[in-house]
Length: 254
Ligand SMILES: [Zn+2]
Image (cartoon, rainbow, N blue to C red; front, top):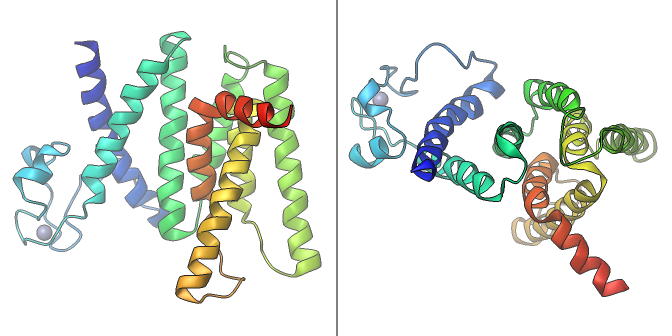
């Protein structure tokens, strides 16, 4: 029964996450107005706003103007529900920590998709999230406060150094300022080990995707990738599997 409630909660929050992902980069309010069709402007009726189910009933089209609703909406609702369910399955440190874990993973999901579409990482999520998790680092049962602080400030300094290096020496913006703010958020919640796994996963997958794009689309090497998207995916995986990944890697070299 608990699992059913968790899954339904996840779907409802997924519906809200859709609004955040759509409106935040456009600098629109995420609380009002109510959801409306971007094509015909009609407000979505309450009974057409049920996560996933409404999409199926409406066969993926607006009830008024029949404009297709992007399939990412129900997919994000399902993925958010998965995040709730899986975090609940893996939770070992009580309800409060479960709630903060879910908030962290939802912020990563939003950053992942917003950076992919708009190439920006909104301050509301990076700085806002950093402040929340900076305060939480004093209560986080999974990581020592001092380790979290050293990791977060250390990685932020490192990325700032790399940012300045790219600008001054190579005269290109190799990293975005959003990436610098985002690594603080990652470091303060994940700690050193999982942060290292995050950055390795992000760099490695970014490199592979970058090479594929260069080869297939014939872009040059200055083609910018949304690094925040890769950091988000890396951080999500590292939260659950970071320790196992490190064990495998270190067993190969020991
Ligand atoms: Zn419409």
